[in-house]
Length: 450
Ligand code: ASP
Ligand code: MG
Image (cartoon, rainbow, N blue to C red):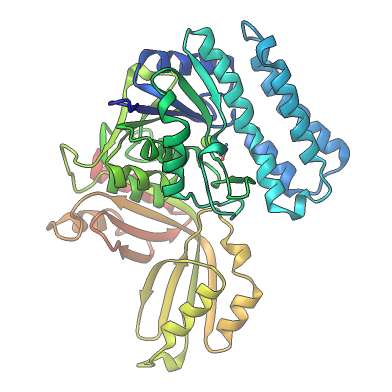
């Protein structure tokens, strides 16, 4: 049976950080009868602990200590449950399995084991919040996302297999939705062999959107600790304010260009199926939030300003480049061969500068000796990494008269290393020195929004 107005609600790490926070979530879930699937992150801090277990060489005592910190978070929640006995057995078998992996000899060298270990945060939080929901009278059932969230086998950054997810979700979940509320884990999936995979840090939003798509939901709520998506990061300026609405395209640009509210891939399923996405605070649901929709009431030229930090810029030049054919191709072939992806490019007669896509800040490592040596075989290479990328997101930025003039006049006093219009009309970016980026964002915010 299909629920006509099905809603998927996702709760982030701070929203499920402790018992009181989980109770806020439970109230939000209980208040909306259309919410039949709940997706949760690990309780705040837990994934970070698991990541440090999985990528640092630690002593036995250090491992034990980190495990203890995780257990303290989980047990703190259990201690406040009305019926703790309902979960103690399940939780302790999760603890045992987590410990076994944490102490596994090959953990540091095997990505499949790492993903296995990382999955425990969500598996524990989803178990516990299910109990909190039952306390509030919700007919909740803990559901293992790995039964439906099929991915490829790229551990750590697994790619969801959309068609399979859809068919598995229809088979296993759909018929039950009228009766119960499924509570499942974000971030984790399983490959064809049933091995646990993860979608990359922050991937729970993506899970929620994927399930919304697979189950034909009409909406997907992302509950977090902010009252929506802001004009810019409120930590940069007090003048930042929440946006009542945003288009899919704008939201995707914002996520790509560094806004931390949504995992960048989240908008893909929403776009494909026209599922509206809501972002709000589980602590203050009465304050409303941001609706991300296909067609907005307003399409202002400026919607928001984002910043992406620690950009790596590579400049290649050769005297021979003048009128040389094939130079760019040679450069980009080497970059692609080393699995680096190019983000922004500017060219002049004698030099090409580009930034590298740096979603996990791992580019510096991957831009290794080998890549540089191959480039240096035929050109001069300069690598600079103290840049931030500031992006103005909006609409019709290429065509509307005066739109870019206004942006340029607010940044005229700064040294702009690169200026890029996006391939679509929704963004305009500046690569600036990291010491200037806060002031630039403030200045742009003042002139475009205040
Ligand atoms: N728990 C995972 C993380 O911290 C996934 C998520 O929260 O979305 O990255
Ligand atoms: Mg999170």
